Image 1 (cartoon, one colour):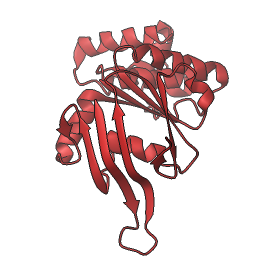
Image 2 (tube, rainbow, N blue to C red):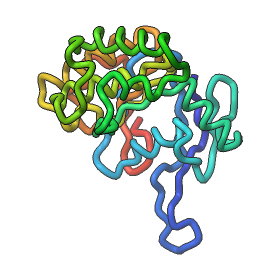
Image 3 (cartoon, rainbow, N blue to C red):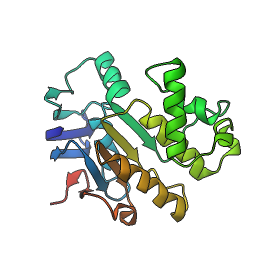
Length: 218
């Protein structure tokens, strides 16, 4: 699904002290499965995710997604790709505070009306929220519930790829493993990339990629 060649992200490019967030990364990722990307803070793992998901454009190298070189497409094409094929889960849930749980899911839907409502309800039920919690705003939900709402939002358009950047860092162990079980289940038919510094949450990963100082550790 993804193929990167000589992928680099360089900051302070025009100075003598240029910094490599990524350096010559060659990577091949499958169509489905749970893939962990692990490394310490500042290792480049989040930068790699941002480049793969088109949130950032790399300084050098290529990224091919489903036979398309996505580093060369327009900003509107990148936005359309993210909307239709990618889902995002972050360390913070980034729910809209004045919206209910179900409206936070539906706001990301490509469709509208009853179809989006039905899909949002199904996802929230599958993720363990009850009907009475659908109408609650984020402040009235627990941290684990908010993160599950964020996962439902990420999945509302049936994305082919879910990018999860430190999705469990703000959760206790019980909720962290529940979130990982949900992501593992989804990875049976889709690609799920989990960026983390905590290897313990990747016990069920199909493979783990280690990154250090912007380079893949072989």
